Image (cartoon, rainbow, N blue to C red; front, side, top):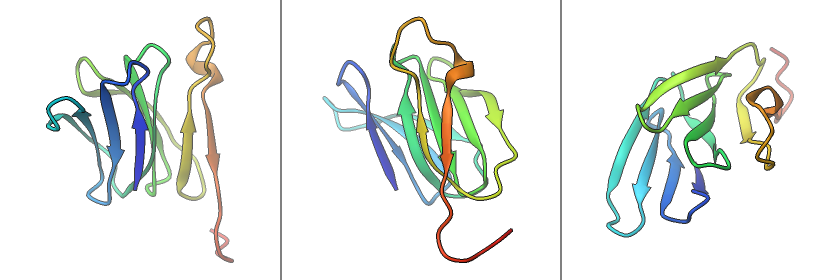
Length: 112
C-alpha cells in the first residue's frame, strides 16, 4: 500500500493491508522489523530525517510514530474522521514532532 526509503538508503518501509508496516534491509532483501498496532490497512509511511522514527497512517483513522530501535509505537495521533493517506516529517534537523503533519483525504461521498 505504501513505501518509503530511509534517509541513508539502506532500508525500505512498507505499509500493508495486513495492518502492519515492515522495515526491509535492501542489501539482504529481508524484513528486519514488523510494526504491529494498527487496526486496519497501513496507507502511508515516512522516515524521520535521522532515520530513527517512522510515521505510519492507516485506514483505522490514526497516525502512529514508531521508535525503530524498539519497534514500539511512541505516539498515536487519533481523532481523524477518515483514513490517514499521507504522513510526513519536517525535513529540517531542528524541527520537533509537533510539526508532524498528516493529511486525511476523503474519497467518494461518505460523510462520517
